[in-house]
Image 1 (cartoon, one colour):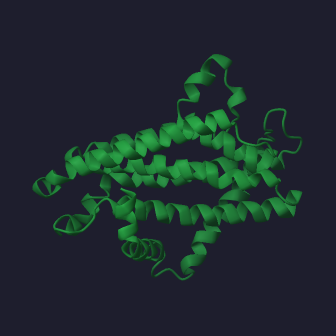
Image 2 (spheres, rainbow, N blue to C red):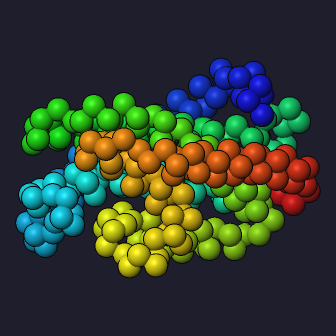
Length: 262
């Protein structure tokens, strides 16, 4: 799997660049929209939850403004997964011309979407860091653990994307199911509330959702200055590697019938 990706690295770079620039092609501000979108959302979330609702993040914060930054940190994680998750079912259907090419590596299309999602994650992260420096100063040094948390998230997103991209070819209803699941995950991944706000008997079930693990750990290292829970991080890596391997194997097994169906 990884050897194939390395072999097609130049094609991956070209397609990812086209995916990112194509999204803003023809707009007056162009690539600046990738900066304005997370900036505007950060301002809106901070205003709504700190001014309108006067929300606080449990007993770990004193200022209501902090809620916006903590919430946005969780959304950065969710948006990375959501972009891959929501686009996967239609990915092959939107690139039928590639299916008919004998030697085109269809499995890299999911990595192209992931690359685009990672680009927007980096832009959102830059906005978050800028806001944190302005409001509260330099972020905690534990933020250096962030790549170790985001890497398995990328692998997990890839695995799910390969699975859904394949199913989307054979079952067109998958697109609608994914749309519903995406909305459910937004509220069931501890984005708008800390996991501690849930009753303790729900914690084990909530942690079966890999997004909950990643969101909690990202907040700890980015904002609260705590190192990640290495037991949970190890479980997350296990989830991610297994999901990526199974998703890739399933995609390669089922891709032989794509041309017949399409």
